[in-house]
Length: 379
Length: 121
Image (tube, rainbow over all chains, first blue to last red; front, side):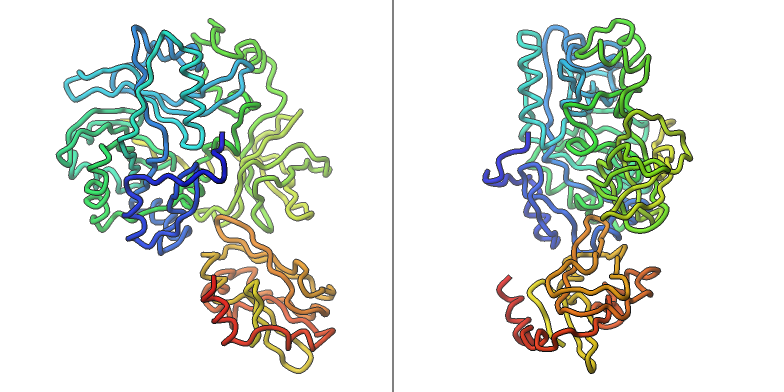
């Protein structure tokens, strides 16, 4: 799914804005993207936890799925209850292959305006590095049932942090009545927006889909607020790790099931009973008997941060798994990691080891998230 | 002070070399959150992996610029790894090495040559 390394890098509508801000640019998901701005990952991370950070996530894939019954059709490729998805709501899900492995994780939603109208199929947002394959899979599996309109002329901006809501609501007052995972069509900044109250940092905030010609204006208006700083992919990754959220291509891949990945919440009760999603036999069995491996969250109690590829051992030193993403937590000031362990189901508090450059270091199994989520669930 | 193309510096006092990473390297790494210094008593060869410096994002190897025996490691970096960013070419030193072959130092770049080298990057 990764694009060939020699493919020319694409740019987002905010590319020039990043350069002007002094960003350090790196290739990511086939795009030339800001990994950090002038203050660096640590300060950007902490600023987002304390104030508000603005992120360009325009590399992600936005699309509309339309058809006679797009919600019912979509259920053929995901394990969530989408027929029951109400207008104005968004849901996290996973695109599954026929073996029940995860092709990608995604958001799918029914944005409507404040009068409850404007419902138009299913609005989906998928990972940038996976988007070409995702839409190919959906097109193949749902041929004749849905048409896919890629929204390639829209940028996507995330505004995240405890002060994000106040900043955004200054320009878009109607966003104040939204709660976590609400999604709205609205006019603000003089253009049509698709706004969800969600994100991937564990903080309150919004993800804002903007017509590309207005991206600079929206970005600059939000950034001029003294509570807002630009945040690169480096801090986006450390923020999502602290929030205990898995990252596709690292913690999730085509071999991992949603049960193994601790994403069983995305398999709704009616779907478990109907067993009518790809890989249902495997997934229902794993729900009943426990999966052969499972995702765990580890707090590293000593030494260096454990990063992707570090082995996980039990107290006796026997290797039972591997870290799939890990790093330093700027909030907890220690190493934190997400990994998979096989053949065991360690309880919260269990003492394991992570092996970093040959040295076993103590690590505790903890309950994710590492840093509490601060989603706004009541208006 | 002498420099390598891998952005380590060496300052010699008698037969002991103090080793660290350059201001350029520290700036490129960003905020240092952890430093693994070599064990005292370890014998290192020039070019060997010698220490590891970690930012939020990644771990990077630091190579021994000279051969010899590690006689001291900067214990202060354990509690204050950010010293590497604050004073990379002074208090942020990594270790002291008793030189096995002092001629190795002469082969390294002086500051002028290192600064010219940085211009080529």
